[in-house]
Amino acid sequence: MKMDLNSDLGESFGAWSMGDDAAMLDIVSSANVACGFHAGDPAGILKTLKAAKARNVVVGAHVAYPDLVGFGRRNMDIGSADLVASVIYQIGALQGLAQAAGTTVRYVKPHGALYNKIAQDKRQAADVIKALLELDPSLVLVALAGAPLIQWARDAGLTVVAEAFADRAYTPAGELVSRTLPGAVLHDEKEITERMVKLVREGCVTAIDGSTVRIEADSICVHGDSPGAVSIARDLRARFERENIQIASFVQ
Image (cartoon, one colour):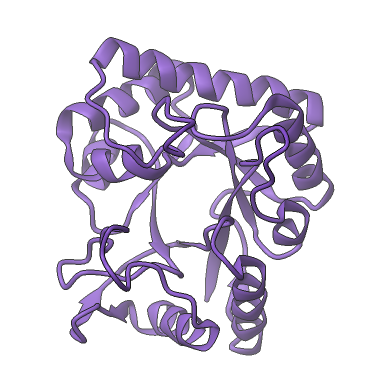
């Protein structure tokens, strides 16, 4: 068995520090690097890319709505032309920085509100798909496990990887519990680890109401900005290794 571990990195901005990229890069197999729209400044992003290169961690573009103040977590009704261009713009910027760091951008994982919106919204999903197809159809798209987006993107010719979240609660329908609701973000390391082992071994997790929900995923995200993120990721990796679950990126 194998599983990818990913984390959202490169999100510090100027004097404001977000997460511990160096520590997370020692643990994860894939790094979703901010592209400047929801977080990240050029110097910090480049530093994270160089650190990922040094650790042989695969890099992906963490594209988002243009929402620095809201950290990309506010819904936006953006026109198609603007959304397509903004996604291409963000990936292109990261590709340039990645080239300077001696690495390459291998996949795209939308962030926050954009991630959740395109999971179900066919119009905005089509815009993001179009952006990848026009820029580089070989880029892998990371999408929420069970979301309609996965089939839409595959039908358009993209390679898609389904993703689960270690530190987020699920509804009985297999969707993420809204961050506005109690219990949406998980913090107990033991609970998180047990949930993810069950996910890998049985393909399911316990939903917020206690029911069992099927989740088929090839990548697990630990949010880099969550309290205790490094400790959670480190504990998860150690447990996976004890369970003989190989940690490896979905792209090589």
